[in-house]
Length: 93
Image 1 (cartoon, rainbow, N blue to C red):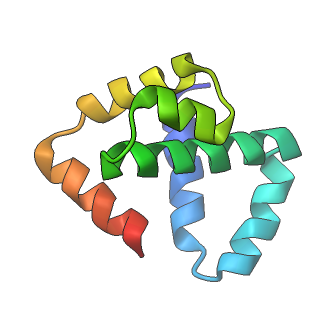
Image 2 (cartoon, one colour; image 1 turned 120 degrees about the vertical axis):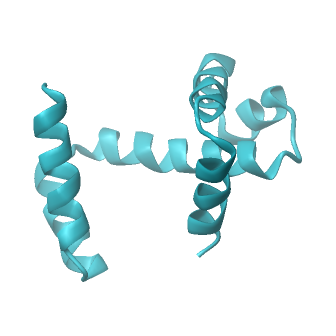
């Protein structure tokens, strides 16, 4: 998949203001397993940003491999301080 197609998909999602309708549309694009994976990733990122648990504790809490936690941690490290703060604010809403 090209980055251009990914951005088109993100733009599509950003245009939909109704959360329930967006969820219905995402059902068309994502399998149940993919939706579960994204939901788990959201929980992992929130826990990493909260900085209250170790990576091992997060892995145990969400019943995932430490590799998933490490990958999420590494992706967060790529963000600027401003991007991390914006993500923290967005996830608190």
